[in-house]
Amino acid sequence: MTVQDRNLKTQDCGDCPIRHRAVCARCETDELAQLEQMKYYRSYQAGQTVVWSGDHMDFVASVVTGVATLSQTMEDGRRQMVGLLLPSDFVGRPGRDTVAYDVTATTDLVMCCFRKKAFETMMIATPSVAQRLLEMTLDELDSAREWMLLLGRKTAREKIASLLAIIARRNAGLMLKRATGRLVFDLPLTREEMSDYLGLTLETVSRQMSALRKSGVIELEGKRHVVVNDFDLLMEEAGDDSDGGMLS
Amino acid sequence: MTVQDRNLKTQDCGDCPIRHRAVCARCETDELAQLEQMKYYRSYQAGQTVVWSGDHMDFVASVVTGVATLSQTMEDGRRQMVGLLLPSDFVGRPGRDTVAYDVTATTDLVMCCFRKKAFETMMIATPSVAQRLLEMTLDELDSAREWMLLLGRKTAREKIASLLAIIARRNAGLMLKRATGRLVFDLPLTREEMSDYLGLTLETVSRQMSALRKSGVIELEGKRHVVVNDFDLLMEEAGDDSDGGMLS
DNA sequence: TCAACACCTTGATTCAGATCAAATGAAGGC
DNA sequence: GCCTTCATTTGATCTGAATCAAGGTGTTGA
Image 1: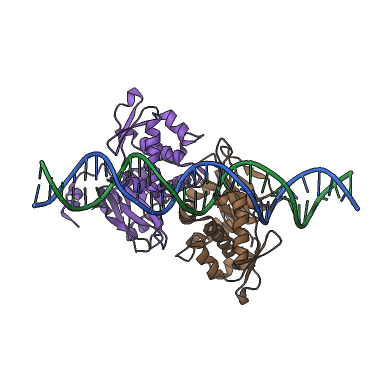
Image 2: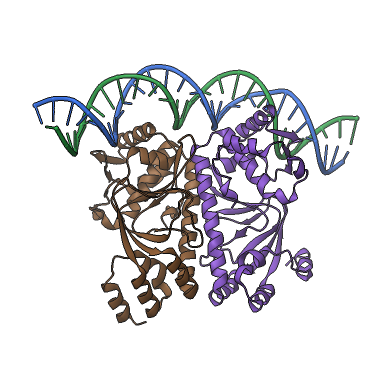
């Protein structure tokens, strides 16, 4: 445990998402107290790998701050991201020892962790945890399927617009100028990471970002800072007929 | 529950997969009996739609025989399959009313169903069901993520080989000539359905099937009957470094 | 026996996005 | 201030798969 971890441990735990997302819905006080005792924090620096595909992962966790990605790599180096973990998202698989994909911190990252064994025991003793986790997993499955439509059938421009829409949505709470209809946020991903998420090359990502800028859908300040002038227009560019259900 | 009890229970209902996959692992006699009473069967003809995206789905089900697909469609008609349901696969989402994708029978189909309300009640009363379902959902999520790699990064030839490998694997029990190393099976999908699953056009599917035939990886008898001479070679064509974990 | 139809194959051409190749720009170290 | 480094943009060219366009094959039903 690092010094930083220890410091976090002594803090008030009000910000731990597992508590709220995995348990709160139907929990009882005793269960909450039990979970509180079990949890601990881990910090990772931007770029650090949390676990490699095939490795043993002895904890389950929930993102507190920062962004992590799940990715799969082929023998020849082709890479596809299969998940984007933003604050409050859950990682880890109770009931299986190894992970099937790399988990990487793309920004500095703090996760709230539970030792897997203890969490599993807890799950068996507390049905509401398993049920909440099932609900979350089904949401993730829906997101994954929405993403399959993007990867299989959307154009490069639609892919970029979709990704921007997702990030904008998830950041909604943090965004400025919401009242004016403008959404402002910083991309937590490099162009290369975006390309790995969208099944494109980084050059195509860059070109389509420029194209969206030129047609007035977004404004770019620096490389990472994005201003969305009209969210509905962005959604239209994304080709979504729904309301962006992938955000769930 | 003794082994003999289990045998007795399985005799009257040997073909119902929900019972085996969702419950058996940790079940008790009462719960089994309760499930037995709740279940009923539905049949669909090839081509029939089971539920449309957005519709209310008042049951959960498990495929007994036949093949069904899950697909999403964009406003302009672009379609992407997001799931292939083979015998023993589960459909339906306890805890949500509507489905997010079309469910279609691609062959004649028999499903073993449970009314959703009753199943949910049952789930709350019987923790093992929720836990088993969580495990199944996590497996599905892994498959979906494996499929994202295919859609985002594989070539047309690799996509076709991957699909053939999946179907071959899942049919392993039914296949002939297993001892000789040859795998023989019928494709349950048209070329168009294959293309919707793989994010290709039907012409490309047809061309790549021919290409695999010409290079001796597969033999085709008629349009649907496939002979795989060397499964390892097929896996190599599929570009998988793993053992094809998507089959789980 | 032969339409009609659904499904599949094959060929010719086009095009979106990949690949190859510089050039630009911003941030940190000396 | 100047060099180095790394992320990004932009340009030129190439290519794998899409698109457009015939034909072929097998099945159903009159």
